[in-house]
Amino acid sequence: MQQIRFQQTIEHVAHVSGRGYWSGRPITLTFLPAAANAGIVFRRIDLPGRPEIRGIAANRRETNLRTTLKVDAGHVEMVEHVMAALYGMDIDNCIVECDAPEMPGMDGSALAISVALDRAGMRRQSAPSNDIMLTSPLRVGDDQQWVMAFPSSDPGLTLQYQLDYGPNSPIPASTCTYQLERDSFATSIAPARTFLTESEARGLQLQGVASHVTFRDLLVFDADGPIDNSLRYDDECSRHKLLDLIGDLAMCGLRVQGKIVASRSGHILNGRMAEAIRNLKDSQTPNRNQVAA
Image (tube, rainbow, N blue to C red; front, side, top):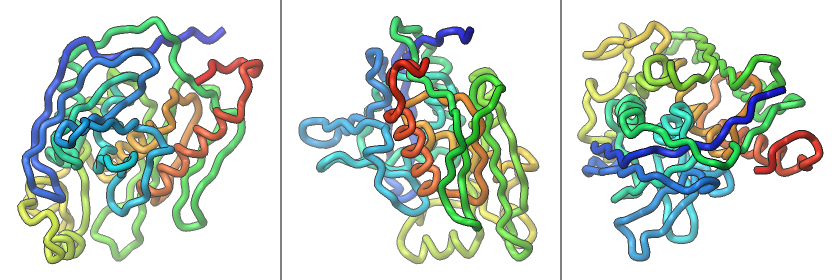
């Protein structure tokens, strides 16, 4: 018989500050404890009425290179690393106050957020967690880019990301497989940084985006490897894609038991898989031995 897992929130308030990659402006996030079943809620304290946007797939808006959530006039973007840190650190319920629409870029990873959440501590709540055990395969994407979810007899969630942009890409091909665990997330996945090619970076800056970002702020690849930087792991790029995958999947609002494999997917396909898992849960009935979400 599977042991019941209870929901968790943070014990103390936590803060993270940095500059936004897109805007360049200083941004502060404040993480607050939240009630059971609240989920992850972003609160825009810079807007009148302090609107709240839940971190769920239904609020997702498809945007390139980042994950955006929107409700009425309020939106937040670049939320994938925040969502990944909360999910990876086993936090079900949390209010994230932000003083800008964009989340801080930090060093292109979720390390600083994960460390702040770890220091904040955890408080177990009385409500059982909202879980789903995958019982049949799910797939989104096409033959070139896809995400698949499978049932698995292994406990918890196992993820694999297959990264291969072809022989002409300066970004090395790699595959990373990881069983999600709080104890290892902050050392194995959270430190993996955002990456792109030099031509992509120059193109963004020509558009007036990320003009303040240097080669030391994330991984920028040319034919010889990272420019003015070094890898934290040989497979750091596929580890970072796993980080993004975790953050996007967290929008299903469920603790998933099963295996998820992604190949060359990005935020759009990851988000569609989160929607597919949420829809699967919504189609299930309580008498199928599932805890109602």
